[in-house]
View (cartoon, rainbow, N blue to C red):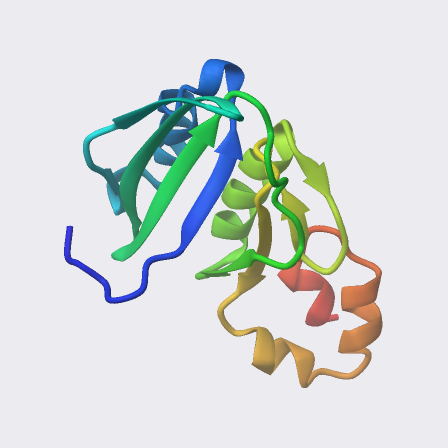
Length: 150
């Protein structure tokens, strides 16, 4: 994995502090666009067993860290937007993240580990130029492209 000068660190909590289930969860949705390095055990910390791993999603590097006891919960201050090619791709990400997570509004959802995502069509700007597009978006949880074209 290439070295980025600045690498975001995402701090999760998982059963027993094991990061392997977290890695598998994201690998299952991002497939070959998800790479991960060696899992580094950090031992017992005030938050219990702790592990970390460098991952790459679509070429962007992150450090995933996992502790047994939640130390700082993920929240809306950090979120990720996915620019999708079409409705099928929106549905794939949305259904995956919300199957054990939570739906929100305007394409926002929270996955089972608490990470926030906004799942959007890559042509959102064009769709938002349509009449009544703001009202359409405000009425949606998952973005449905067809609703903007009516």
